[in-house]
Image 1 (tube, rainbow, N blue to C red):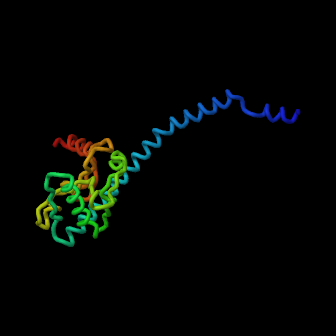
Image 2: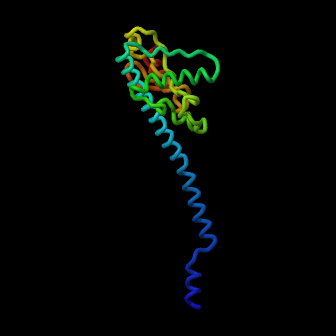
Image 3: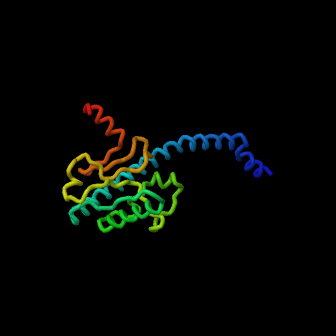
Length: 182
């Protein structure tokens, strides 16, 4: 009997269990914002990597073909947007960018992760700029955007990749322009 009494008294009281649970809940509450911030930074880094891949693929396309891809979007239904997206995916895929490269992970999460792996569901989250077919036009202006993220989902404005391969966001560009007096 003494041994079983010792085991029971060695256990935790209800108050001690509740205190432990409250401490765990507080720690979880403190970790959630840190996790969210880390996830947001990782998604922005992935978007930057996607833009860099699109830049490299487009640059190789221009080098090989002598001009920017001549793909225009006809306004109208979702089908035309999907056709436009599929045409760009197809044009740059021989140069490295995959279908996934065109998808911003933050936008994908905000849309609740819809499928985009078929032509029928094609979408691009980085809008390509339109240039004429002259070989020098895409490289004519160093700060000309090549691809612009379709939404401001990272908090500093849409991400943009420029002719010179640099990547920035609209807020940083606006601050730089204000300092330069433009």
